Image (cartoon, rainbow, N blue to C red; front, side):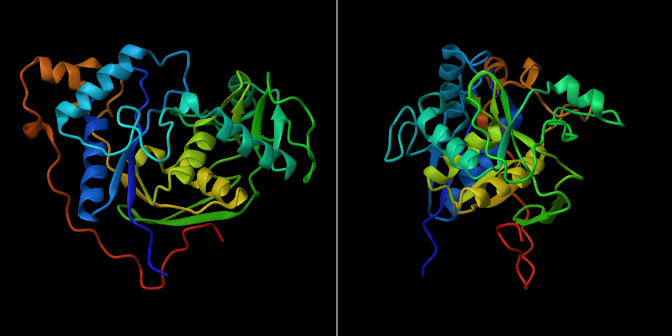
Length: 295
């Protein structure tokens, strides 16, 4: 059978102004789609209802158009996999949630983030989800009948299981469940899916064949690979890009406005001078190959 046609995606979250780091990653995604004669879609990842605002959606579209990005499917141009805004796709996420619940793969959890941090023997660094100590984890195979709303739900990872994939930018990758990451959130108590679940469900539903994103999301990939397997979904390939940093070597964030696309544009910069250099040739995958799914 021939390989499916290449489908890549841009998936910004309108919680603030996009910065140069976002633009560089999106540019790589566009380059890879063009090189393979594929399709690039734009998905509006607007699930964070507390921070996503209509003005950020408008500026997002305007700023990435200014940078030179183009797509053929999205919230502004429609396509066969609409809707392209996550806030309009709740039925997809609820269906996946029920499949996981009935399989006994998720469970309700009363622990807050601070509860988890207090239970750990070592301090947690960074913004990634801390390693869950298993406080609320029921016996294996337990199917909860608790109502979905009003409580967090976690995916039960197989402790000691090593998840592997081959990244087209970083090469072979592996992490062990229960060591590098623990039971992770799939549904939040405000009745919204987590990033891990929504991203997995949408990338499959929109038939994405390669996910291009920043290397700070590598650990998310391991979690999502477990969800792809649990939901019996086709696994895409992955390409994690280096992060853009400021003059002090600190990675860019939306709270730092100095390198936002809107600010750079207002300062008179031309997008051609801001785009990343052509990437260096990538080494081929190992001859023995790396499984796209965990083993």
